[in-house]
Image (cartoon, rainbow, N blue to C red; front, side, top):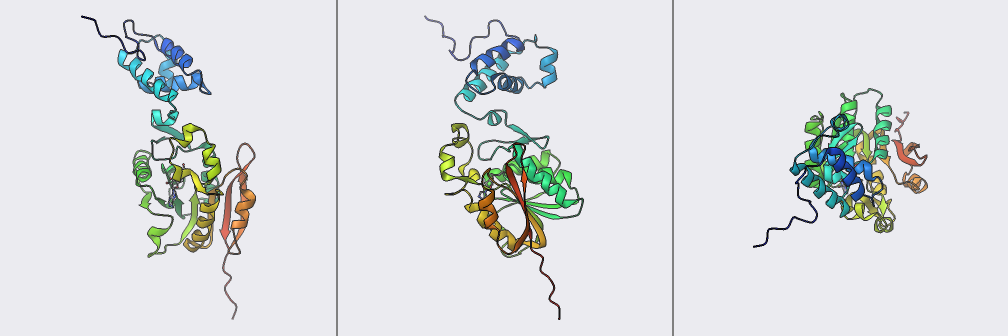
Length: 301
Ligand SMILES: C[S@@+](CC[C@H](N)C(=O)[O-])C[C@H]1O[C@@H](n2cnc3c(N)ncnc32)[C@H](O)[C@@H]1O
C-alpha cells in the first residue's frame, strides 16, 4: 500500500519553521507583487494572530503547523489575485481598523481628505451630516468620532455594504451613526430632511478606465462602487443636482472626485452653488471639491 503524498502547496510540517523562516519563504513566494516583504509580514501576522512587536521581539519562535498552513494558503490566494486587504479582512482608515470584504470598497487613503475638509467646515458646530455611498462606513464613522456633536446619517444602495458598515460602527465606537438603505436620496423623498453637510466618495471611474484597472481591483471590488457612468462624472452630476434639494441654505457638499475631473466637475455646479473650492491630495492633484448651496437673500419689502 502506498502512503498518502503530502500536498504540493503545503509542505509537511516535519520540522516546524521559525517565524523568520516563514517570513523569508513568504517573501520569496510573493516575488511578483509590488511589496513582497511587506505583504509577507502582513499575512504572516494575520495567520499567526500576532502583533508586529511580537514578531520582531521573537522571530525565532516556531508557530504550529496550522499557522504555517494558513500562511501558505493566504499566499496562494494572494498569488491568485485576491486583494491583500480582503485576505486580512481589515483596512486602516483615519487610524481606525475597518472590517472589509467582498461587496464593499476598500477605503483608500485619499478619501481621508474628505474627512479632513468636513472637520474644518464643521469647526466644532452641531451639524447634521449625510454620507452618500457609505461603503464600509469609513467617512461617516471617522466623522462621528471626530465630531461627537454631529448627527450623522449614512446611506448606501448595497445591503452588503451596509451590513459591514453597521458592524464597523458598533466596533469602532460610532453607534450613533444611522445607516439607511437608499438609492441616492430615495429613502428621504417623503420626509425631505435638510442637512447641513452632504459628504460623499461617489463612484467616479469611467467605463473605459474601469476596463483598464488592475485585475485585483476590477475582479474583486464592486463595479457599482467604482463606475460613475460612461464618462465617469455622471453619478457626481446627479448627486450635485439632487443634493441641492436636501441641503439647508448655506449648506455644503464635500465630495471626492477623480484626478483630472476638476474642470468637468466645476461645470456640473449651476447657479444654485457658490464657494466652489478644490483641495489637493498629497500628489498635488485636486481630489476633493466643496461647494456651498447659495444662500437665499430675504427679499426686501
Ligand atoms: C466609491 S464607493 C465609496 C465607499 C466608501 N464611502 C469609501 O470611501 O470607501 C461608492 C459607494 O456608493 C455606493 N453606491 C453606488 N450607487 C449608489 C446609489 N445609487 N445610491 C447609494 N449608494 C450608491 C456603492 O455601493 C459604494 O459603497
